[in-house]
Length: 396
Picture 1 (cartoon, helix red, strand yellow):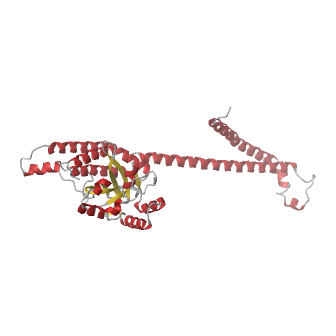
Picture 2: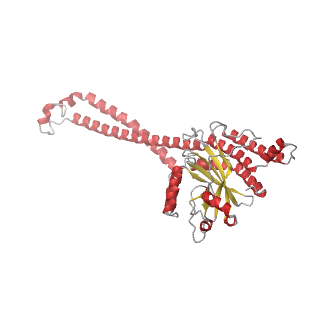
Picture 3: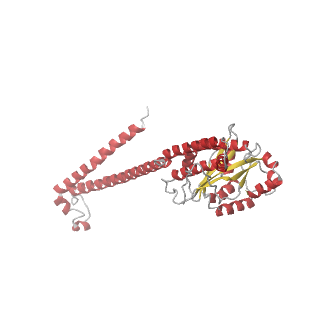
């Protein structure tokens, strides 16, 4: 029968206790022997200088002195061994304590700020009340111009999107507030990238196609050439963007007015390639395209590393890598990014949410960022309904 680890540990502790108690007893015996034989020890080698030049014999070797020095040497060895063991024990205890502190920091790091859950509950309720209220207003018949403007705004589903984004961005900023890499003046932004399928792109008129493909990065501007290697495009809808600002609340508190979109964002799109049986390597840019294709969140702690990630993937040409590197080195708005897909009621991916900021290490690491994505999932369902309604009303 094998001895358990706890029994071995207990036995080791018992042995250590006996050993630690034995050393001072040995030292006491050594001192006692030295005190009662001090005269012999003083007259013997090495304390007596005259004995240094005399050849040792049985007659001139002091038995009392020899026993004393033997006891003292053994005591010194035992004491040195004890100190070595104590040092190792202190190092082990220190490492254990350091690991415990590190684990505690990780646990605390995954926990939201104290008032975060209250803010989350209020934000979700505000968004739900806002959308419900706006839909109710949209059913009214306008009696005058003022009412007509209010009803028109209530029908603006993209304004609904911006309201939800404003709440999500405020929550993302608050989520980071307890971290060393917290907001500290960072500007948080959010947008929705709509998926344009290959069929959609083929049927675009020339003017719309030219506008869309000219805003797409790292792909050919010619539609025919680009579609030879693409399965679709993710396009930022400029009217579905929001930016936090220091001179106003991150959260849109006024539920009856127009929520401003991010006027610093220019038309932007990225290509999407789906894996095939003969080519399962994903040739997608880290970030929104990767999140869309893999159907899971993608975390970019520092966008300047995107070019290196693409280089290691081995799926991009040198000209593409140069463009990617130059673009993200100059892009200070999205220094760190969290992306995750939006699905329709049938489970088909239709868009991607991007929450990003102009500082590195949003949410500090992938574990914490993934937890934030899980917490914000109810808002994703709101976006799903809004995009469905928007498609039905041909606003896209």
